[in-house]
Length: 220
Image (tube, rainbow, N blue to C red; front, side, top):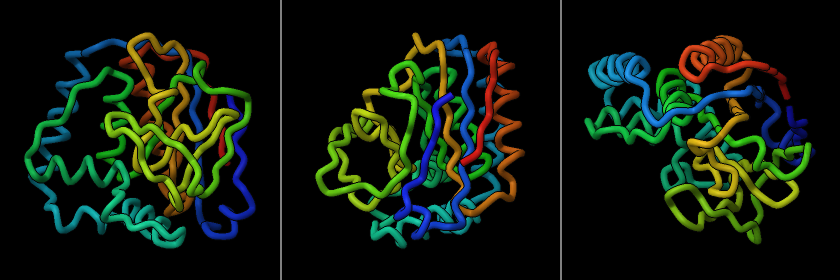
């Protein structure tokens, strides 16, 4: 399990933030029939019960957007990943099937509104991650997006550089079909309420769909 440290600047700007990390040994797969049967039900229900105007009013999504504004980032230009996923569903656009581990994270993000980072822990450089505000000089190659301007975004950094923001994660440490050890970071800008339920949901899904073992949980 990596140790996660918040900088003084991050704590000063966003004192209400609570984070949780889940580390586990896993077996990934390209597709799981049982998982996608459950996921399709969630997607259908979410699309029926929500509209695009209400997505950014969800407590967890609004809190993330407010955090962006506090740090000096425009959330409509750099939408948090959970918001982007939810908007896609209510607009009746199909969701990409990536692999089971990534799909689990997307499931939980849609259900809870938390922007959740997922990483191949063995690709992370060093034993410590720092949660900070992105700098102008930071280079970040976002998954499927290319270079992303992460100035003033919340950013997790290892010894090499940035690995994840609530908007997108970095190519260098992304989950692949060969991932054997996963690190999941839950960003709760709305505070502690509901965080333990999200941890339990993710842990149970990792066990059910990815044969997870040696699960470790920490808060930061």
